[in-house]
Image 1: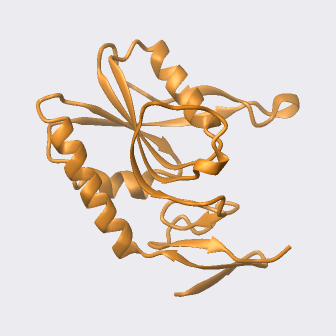
Image 2: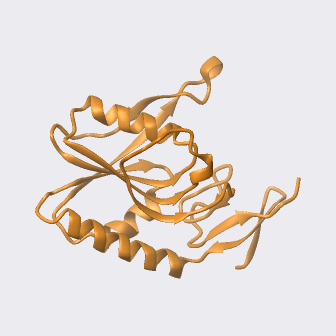
Length: 180
C-alpha cells in the first residue's frame, strides 16, 4: 500500500518495513557490542513500542532481560500530565536500563519515564527510539543513544504507531498528507 485513509485523513508511505528492518539490525549490532558482558534490562514503553521492541530484541545477541511499562496520565483538570509508571515488575536497583520508545516527540513522556526509573535507583539509563522529532523536543536529553530515524514534525502511523487506536498493525510507517 502506498496510501491509506483513516477517518478522512490521508497518509502516504513514509518508511517501508525493509528500511526499518535494516536500521534495527544496525542498532542491534551497536547495542550488542556496547552491552557485551553487561546484562542490560530493556524496558519497552507501551503501547507503541511493541513492534519495534519485538524486532529489536531479535537483533540483540547478549544476555539481557526485558520488561514493559505503561504510562498513566491524569484525567480531568490536569489531563495529559504523566503521573505514573505501571508494570516494571522487577528490581532494577543498580541495573543498566535501556528504554525502548517508538517515537520521541516533545520528550514529556520520556522525561517522566527517566525520572520514574531513577527513583528505582537504576545504575544507568540509555534510550533507544525508532523515531525522533528533534524540532519538537522540549527537553534536553544526554542519554538518547540509539535513534532509528530522525523525522520532522510529521504525524505518522503504522509499525506500532496509531491514530485513534488504528493502524498499529501496519508493517510500514505512513505520514499524514492531509491539508487542513
